[in-house]
Length: 93
Image (cartoon, rainbow, N blue to C red; front, top):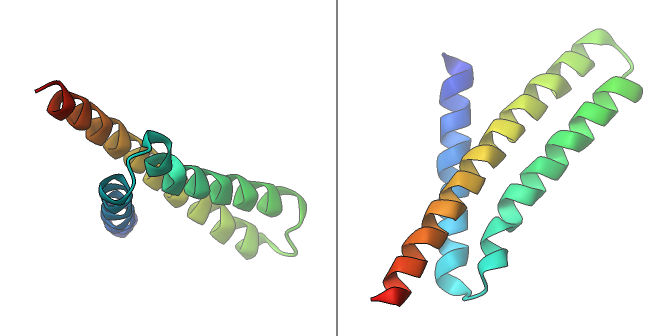
C-alpha cells in the first residue's frame, strides 16, 4: 500500500512538471523530458544494483527505487500523451 502511495505521489509531482513544461514551451518534445530522465534514472539504478552493489540490501533498495521510477515515468509519459492530444484538439478549434 505504501509503495502504491509513493508511486502516486511521485506521479502527481511529475505530471505537474510535465504540465508546466507544456504550458511554458510550445515544442512538444520538451514535455517528455521528465519521463526520459526518470527512465534513465531507473535504468541506471538497475545497472548499478546488478553490477556494482556491495551488499544485498543495497541492491534490493536500488531495485525497488528503479521500479518506482519506471512506474512514475510511465505515468508521466501517459500524461504527456494526453496533454499532447488535448493541445491538438485545442489547436483544431
